[in-house]
Amino acid sequence: MPSRKFADGEVVRGRWPGSSLYYEVEILSHDSKSQLYTVKYKDGTELELKESDIKPLTSFKQRKSGSTSSSPSRRRGSKGSRGSRSRSRSRSPGRPPRSSRRSASASHQPDIQETRREILEVKLTPLVLKPFGNSISRYNGEAEHVERNTERNELPQKNTQEKFHLPQESSYVSTQYSLRPRREEIKLKETDFNEEKLVTKRPALLRTYEVSTTQTEDLEFGGVPGVLLLMIGLPVFLFLLLLMCKQDEPSLLNFPPPLPAWGDLWETRVFGVYLLWFFVQALFYLLPIGKVVEGMPLINGRRLKYRLNGFYAFLLTSAAVGASLCWGLELHSMYRHFLQFALAATVFSALLSVYLYARSLRAPREELSPASSGNAVYDFFIGRELNPRIGTFDLKYFCELRPGLIGWVLINLVLLLTEMKLNNRAAPSLAMILVNSFQLLYVVDALWNEEAVLTTMDILRDGFGFMLAFGDLVWVPFIYSFQAFYLVHHPNEVSWPVASLIIVLKLSGYVIFRCANSQKNAFRKNPADPKLAHLKTIHTSTGKSLLVSGWWGFVRHPNYLGDLLMALAWSLPCGFSHALPYFYVVYFTALLVHREARDERCCRSKYGLAWEKYCQRVPYRLVPYLY
Ligand code: NDP
Image (tube, rainbow, N blue to C red; front, side, top):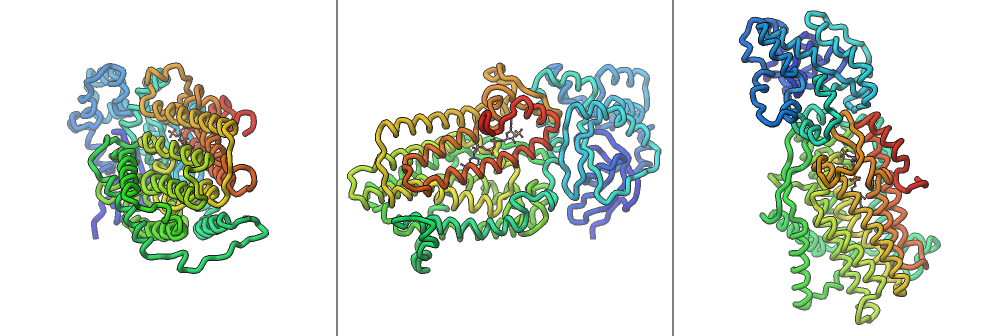
């Protein structure tokens, strides 16, 4: 059994993450697996620290007479050699301005005195004041921290020799701190770019506390009963919808549609073809072509590398499919196996989810998704591990855009060919061409802008579990192609004037969607981008800023609005003789309204008052003057 150096209840000094400052803490517990100590700061903040970040009180006192060169802040201070602003920004948050350091060394104060001086210069900002179980969330309002700073500044000085007096609360209050030297605080609003550097310099400090597991009573999707219902209901619903659509006169009066025989639903050969598809896409993903980029910083400060070759995978797939057609492959025959392919994909996504959950049990805590809860059923659905990888193969990133999205285009093509075959047409209908080309544009756009997926909720927040596995591999290809599926059985003639209006709607939606997403991605990548200099922003105390003009000043989720307009344009070519093709618009509206609420909740806890300010400046969420 590995030994531990500190006992429960012992009062020691713990290093504040990302800084060189040590505060008095009480050891609460020790996890022998992770070798981490749970410690409690005097103000109630609980953190997990490594043994190397903990020092006995006595050893700290010894350093009074110790060599000054051993001071962590000194060692770090010797590194900076860039321009004056970035140099001052990149220093340790606990490091004093140069002038105070000079005076300290000039008067030959002992190290402990210098440390105390550093502490005096540090601004401690309370960020979260929210009850929680094992979760810590961030309330990061600017106005609040100004008020509370004076009290917090006292804390490190008083606790030098004091005994702890810890609040005895069952559900305690968590407080986070933004550690910044006072003088730097004044400069914070000057540029956002340097703030971004600050964020990447100490991501662990800023993100560790965002990424902690969710409290059971805060669970999304209706908690455990809700996700159970979704896991059973969604596959059943998918098959009922497809079966209904195959009816000549789909109607609730004809519900439920006749159920197919087992043989019409399952064919092992089809499952094999599905596996072949999946692994060929995986092979394309592994090809050493395309740029390699870094994702957003993880809680441990690491940035994962991702290869951007989705567009090349699409081109290779298109070439392979084109060649197969030239060699006489009857692609439309896949249509006969449509339900079998849907079931094969469903079975595969379920097996993948089981594998993902099983491997997540061995994942270290810092690699778990902030959305996971500790409840097995819920975590199976939402995904427990944030970025499951086999070597460099990132399973979530791969599934997000490749097999399902490219599969959706292939299914649309199969449906187009089937429409021609079944209706003896020499060319596809205008409605089918519109649906196919609109959705092709959507997929090509996503693959062309593949890097943008790295800043989405799916990659940053949700783990990889049933929700994304089923969503990416089954729901997207088999439900998003629903308009084309509908047109095979219910042809609709669209006149050119109507088609022109639909095209205008589609392009308007696309422009809003693309410009909004590109604007935000460019801003997040480089807030000092001269092309964005005209945009107004609100500073937040996480270091990031929020856009409040341009597309993001129009509504709070302009990209969702554009997406919804496009969804409507995909359904309109199916005409108005039935509500079924509009199912996608209704579902997608519900999805984005719910997603917007999830994101809003996250942003409110991340940005606090700054987010409130943004909501006041931009009052509408999706549609101006409506919602
Ligand atoms: P977004 O791309 O909208 O990202 C939301 C994040 O953007 C927030 O968490 C926040 O993160 C940042 N943000 C919010 N407001 C601002 C602002 N004013 N200024 C700067 N940054 C801001 O969310 P999604 O990941 O949900 O969507 C990505 C795209 O995918 C969208 O276009 C959406 O329509 C599409 N989508 C499509 C689906 C489909 O099935 N077809 C399903 C889901 C999404 P931070 O501040 O941390 O950077």
